[in-house]
Length: 412
Ligand code: ASP
Ligand code: MG
Image (tube, rainbow, N blue to C red; front, side, top):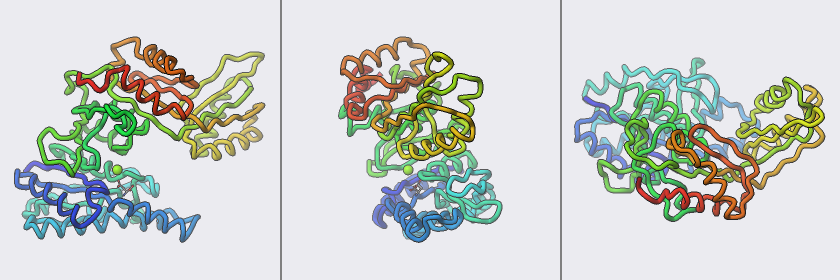
């Protein structure tokens, strides 16, 4: 029988009543003839609560025990979902990560999925079980310890199961009804996209649109998993939500598909570093060793053998970056006159595969920002993305203006 993967996020399983609602959706797909693998998150707020308990108990916690604790939220919802389905006379069984077993690397709290053997679950399907309810977010390492996949990791569990079982589709049920052209809380004419390409979704996800864990999109792209994002609160329908798919499957799209933003960015400038071979390698090698996620980088033109180096990183990593660079200055001979941190910036990005073939997108974006009197501090581009750093106080204005100028409210 064909297999379908259905993933329910925290808000969709927040109470026994909501679990019942989600289970009805599952029952519907079973009645269509699917064997279903349901991936569940913890009840909304649960994982945060568990993380809080860990920090309260042991600020310098053992990473293995952290995973033992924070993975437990999903165990509860998996059991409750299986019970609910049984109450509806749907043959169902719950599976924790280790029971599958979902094999991962040993990097606790950021483990990578290595393998999902399918035989145990397939054997149960052939015996008449119709739904395997799997606890998302968790797995087991070679050392037989419980691991977790990073926050938001149930999305990745779901896509990995869809790939392993060659599922017809992977439906991600969440609290929004799809992927939008931008955040509807900022631009009220934001439009839900019927389809979006993997490449664009990947950019949007890593740029701050929090619908899907970035890793899950990468995985779906690599294994050609048909991914759909939809709400468990809407009436079931065939074309609900947003389909994330290969760009060949999208007939028409706007040049720009979406405007993403990230509020918590910082701009760091190293004033007057030596302009010599190896300087960038030393600076960014040191930052990377310290776990700083550097995004945009600018190196100015050198004068008298000195240059300025600017980069962006998440605001919460500024202290770590400063410490790494101060240390680096003595250890690695990265001498600089001054380190300036500007923590009042936001990053705005326009994303669209249409940019590959259309010129003038960057010019239009810069002109729009200038018309609003917004100064651009840093620019970075890729084939399908243009990002700028601006003062945070203009963030909403910039998102609205760009959404308007690229006419994203209009269906292509
Ligand atoms: N419960 C985990 C989290 O909140 C995993 C997930 O829901 O995807 O991060
Ligand atoms: Mg999530």
